[in-house]
Image (cartoon, rainbow, N blue to C red; front, side, top):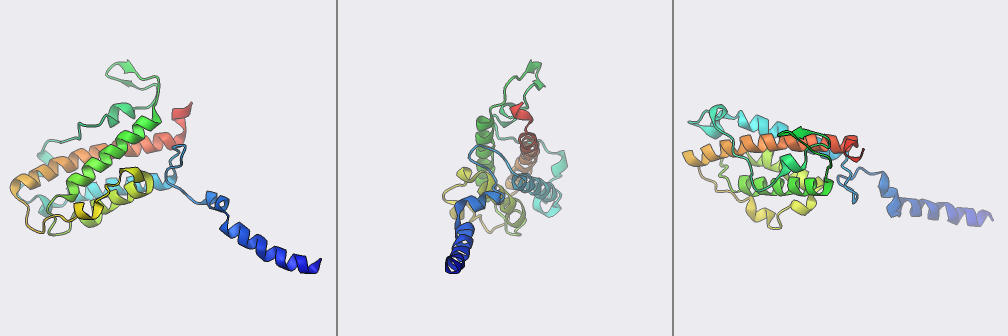
Length: 199
């Protein structure tokens, strides 16, 4: 019997350390049932902070007062309306249901849209890449993996040249719109994590 105990203990230890069920205790961003974890909230918050800080970079928008410019939102998705909380009143209409799958799909499409748009921007001073694009990529990779562009590396090869006035103006408007959409995404993630949408 002592010989069996000697073999049993290491075998049990090996089983516990290699068993897939052991990994359940790890923090996974989006589970198959759509539950968001704390890490998704942190990635979204970091993205919002980086966008906000980037909008304050005067040298990124030289010759333009970005704070006085209009906002350019992605109008190809319905994130704001689809992700509105259950029982919320928007435009006088009470929303009775919350479609989590549709909401997450719209968020992923937004992230993909802004990623492709921002990755194509000239960034000779590396003001977008290490902050906004990096945090956007982390959010996509860890919480919306399906939304990652398959040709991500080629998308990030932005021109290493100074941007034109029109490019800087467009970037300002797009970043302001992305900031607003990221605020929505942060609120939606908090709403879903609270579990209110299931009540």
